[in-house]
Length: 240
Image (cartoon, rainbow, N blue to C red; front, top):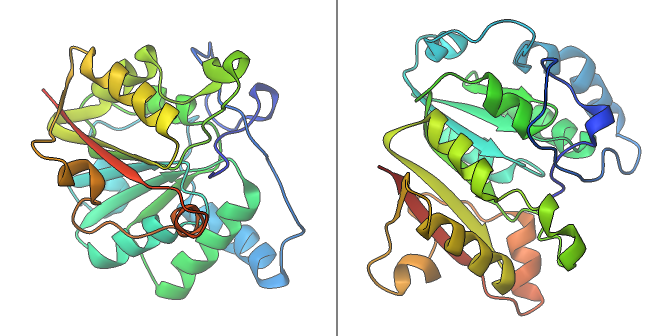
């Protein structure tokens, strides 16, 4: 599963009361030389400063692009970078707390010469709280940590209150897209989406959740799931 977010004592972002925190590894193996250099020289130009007030015209972060999308827990950045490369008129914000994933993504963004990606290296709750109302048209959550033990379920990203906060930053008609290969977490997420007053599940036939949405880029986590015989599921919900 994609490492999700930092511990509460290891957050980057605006100070203040935190309504939730998400847990996961902060750092893995040592960075390669070129990745460490990218973290020092490239990341500062991509990083979002949560200590500054969020502009209501978020497109200014992207050279006046008006369609802004968010990916939470982008892991190694495969989906984020591919989406940004294929949609140059769209601004993409990626959020991740795992340093090695951030380094890999920053390196890929630089190599591809992309100017439509911004990164928050920290907790998604902080970023979501900072974003203005109706700021993004799509929120992607791909292969989040399922926290399978019952005592850890409170650490799952998808909760009733987190869906409410995602709804606040989505434009009317915007999408929350979720992918996972863990049946229990899929059922957990769908149950909370269906009872949330802000969302409508868009599926009309089985293939709508069996097949990825148009433009989906397979991540390394999905490739691992398929190798190990697990079946992915894709849930798309629309903001009312």
